[in-house]
Length: 341
Image (tube, rainbow, N blue to C red):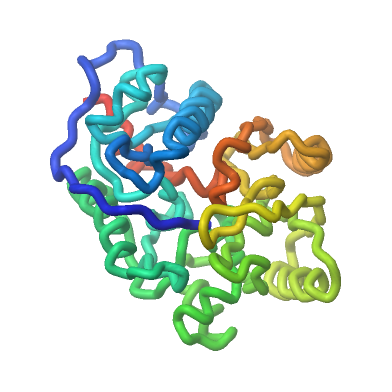
């Protein structure tokens, strides 16, 4: 899931908010804590002006839920930082990133990160897409993050992985790179180093992202939205072909008719969840299927499940997973240390 915004000036330097805090929130000593990174909207960016406070409120609540369970950093520009004063100092990294939907233009597969080329077909101006990805790339280069790159076009929102041996993407990947199924399978297998790749039809004609369709709750368990026939059989067939070792479980989803410009609403899609080593952060919407979806997730994982109210942002086309980027290992350490100053 992804969106566009009006570019703002990239500040190549960065600094932390306030003085160094001797009581740190993020824990670098626990290898089981993954880092989640969010990118705040700029108070100077008119594209998000009408929903600025809703996005800020969502990100603060999300970050506060993560604290103590995993690690979290919110990238905020200097003018916007005061709006995030409710968060601890060591969670805030002052820098400019060109959009809030950081999942799509960052890296995929936390344990062995690779950055694909961000050039989605739904962008009216690919120059803007390049600007957005470059704004984050400049920051990661400056911090010295170790990241592999690929020239193939693929949004992070279209990569759902178990961080071990399996990945799901939609057929949009084949279309954007003019690849056959066999070629696409080979590219992803080699780039990500995984033996299992499922390439499924997509349910959203604009973005075509897999992370609004499926989620891993365990390395060998995948939840998928319940669809009407014949689309249901097409999706399940592709999943079974690509992931023969994985148990596939259907969960209900309420597909909202609303949206944000050309982007379809993600309200009601609980599978747009962020999955870390020991925790799952699930978007909820105050509808009739929330408890059914939460119960299904809890019944099929040994991770701790946290509900994240997402009705303030989901109408824009994404929620919990779309608005966060996952890192582990040395790259996570570098970003956390940068926020500490």
